[in-house]
Image (tube, rainbow, N blue to C red):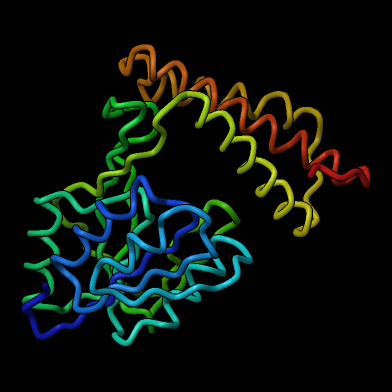
Length: 258
């Protein structure tokens, strides 16, 4: 529980997160004055798990990651919000840093690094670490933006961001198959967003963007040092980039990708 004078609302959006949500909520409750979960009608045990905690549980139709997260922000009773994904938790060091920042709050936004666990292995390279995120901010100074499904907090011009110590722990994929399946799903979402923006990639971009992505992540960002899983991550991310442009080309030709 947050004992400072600065009150914080913890926010999470969910859909079928029974394997992750308890861990996430337990970490948020330690630093937040209220915790709100916005769920898009889960069919697993997510709802019952959430209702076992002293939190506010809201069901709301899903219109996109950015839209759902901004809806969650709109439900917060406090100006300062801390937003996590259901598969994330605050590390002990990060909770300590957040509490220290809140005890003498003179910030408008805080950033910290995200450390990802992939199939049981913590990934230290591959473009995945340090993966700096802004997740705690004054909601009057910014909102969720970006391109679905890759959302990010976009702040007003001139807003200062302080980087604090401690990692946001991210439990991404439990199996390689899960990564591949979800990557294809995300590629479709991104393609649809790009299509709505009127983007029309060339064949050159569709061919060389995946090659550049793999070269950058595996060699320049040292994915090779992450061993077998580093190779899987960089290869899958490269393939996802290719799929995104391939799906976009299909949409631009008037074909469906569902």
